[in-house]
View 1 (cartoon, rainbow, N blue to C red):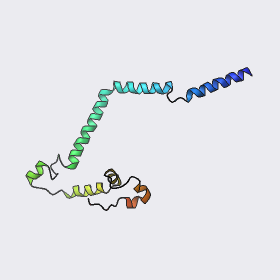
View 2: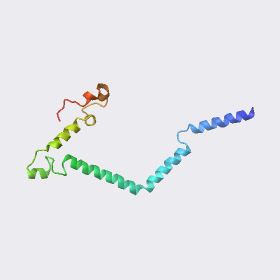
View 3: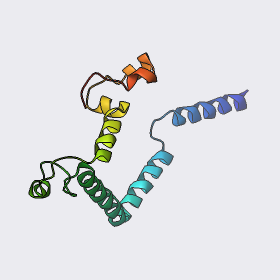
View 4: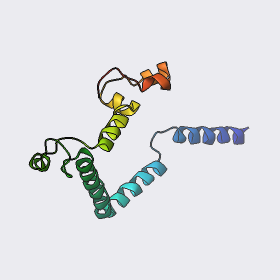
Length: 128
């Protein structure tokens, strides 16, 4: 009888230790992850820096500021060509008709595509 009571006590102790939110094993993983990030900070800085530079250059080219295709840029006013190329207009209309763009620009509520179905979620009454 005494051996069974000691077994129950050890089992209950084990259950109490596993119910904690931060076990020593989880702390060790977090500590190792932070240590790895600290050691690899130069590499991580390069990766995030290149990603940021790529995003900025991509945004500049995509909007036309770096290629001179934007009507407000200095190159387009000196060349006196204020019309946008048809492929840019078509691409802009395709992007503006997407559900993600309409939700991001607050033309549509995020739950509308789920309530009304996907066929009517891309059509909007706004102008492009």
